[in-house]
Amino acid sequence: MDKNKAGYTEGFVSILVNTLLFGLKLWAGIVS
Image 1: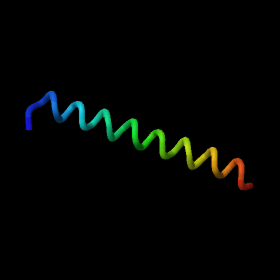
Image 2 (image 1 turned 90 degrees about the horizontal axis):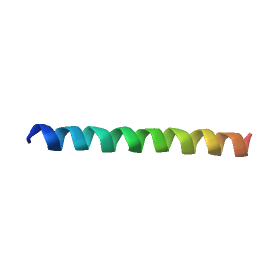
Image 3 (image 1 turned 180 degrees about the vertical axis):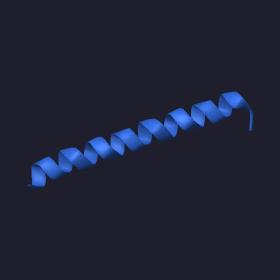
């Protein structure tokens, strides 16, 4: 894996995690 691909994957994972955390907070706010 080259550096470009590794950086792209890392960025994608970061966005995915942030989206999941945001969704979880949003869901927790609606449920509680």
